[in-house]
Length: 235
Image (cartoon, rainbow, N blue to C red; front, side, top):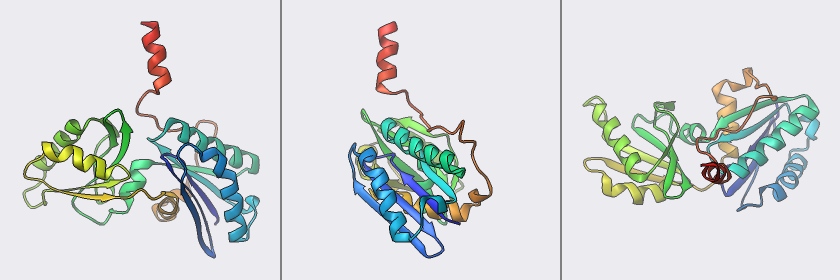
């Protein structure tokens, strides 16, 4: 089964194709240029993989949270390609995908994205299982959540929290001052998540299911700046 995976959720843009011959991936610090790179990257990877777009069985993307514009671009591309070719769509939440790398670890895993405005998108995981809702929080709120969760853990469980993902270093510096008695680790990775998304989809059993492309949509846990401004103008 051939899979195309797209990650446009952050400034680091990545695309990957998985076939029986192996994985073929591309990534770049794209800033806000995702739409300019996307289809050239897809065409380049299909040539490397020696397949056509029509040979792709599943079109996948990172669902969010993340950049409002980036997520819309990724979803529009995946839905357009899947609909035109009659193929399956799969979308995966950003934080779930980030935590998947550490599914074999027993300590608290906290994937983090920089949500701007001195806030973070985050969630708590252990052994790859999500323990909390997706959060839009300040550094102090994130630190309080880590302290409270580790305080409820069994005495035998280590008081270790790993911050991972593109916002890990920023979050580490921001929350350290609010924590005590916690061994805080950081795995700051600004790499694109398309290769990890391919692995996640193949090993998680998601290929057995397919989303209804008519209702598939990005995961937003915060209103956009435009929505906030409109609401303020009406009040």
